[in-house]
Length: 116
Image 1 (cartoon, rainbow, N blue to C red):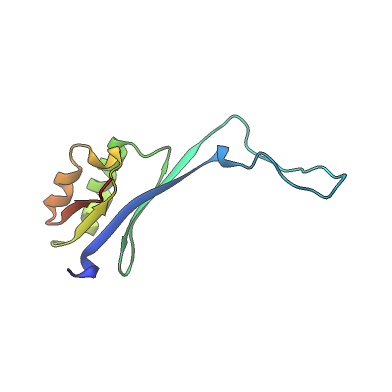
Image 2 (tube, rainbow, N blue to C red):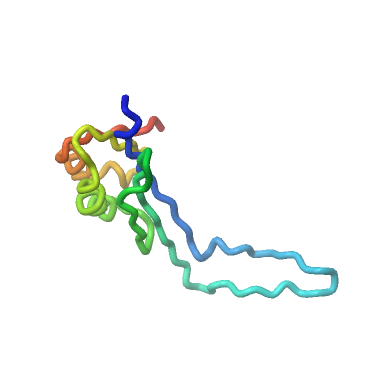
């Protein structure tokens, strides 16, 4: 297998409620810091990783959902793929919605889900 043909696809997210709730200060002093309050937002970053770098990066306001992932694959990832590429995905439910496999196979690439 040619390592240059693999595209490892994954996402990561962060939320504004991931702020530390406790801190340390010298004895007798207060810890002072600012945190967002009551506006818990999630930001998700998804991209493909090839042997020679990142392809099709996207930042999404909100969590990854099936319809967003399908649109990402159709509009960004599939155009970056070539015939013979192998897209490796984990078993996230959003990765298995209708249309994802068809978009990847439509450009001549194949799909490989990691075991659970």
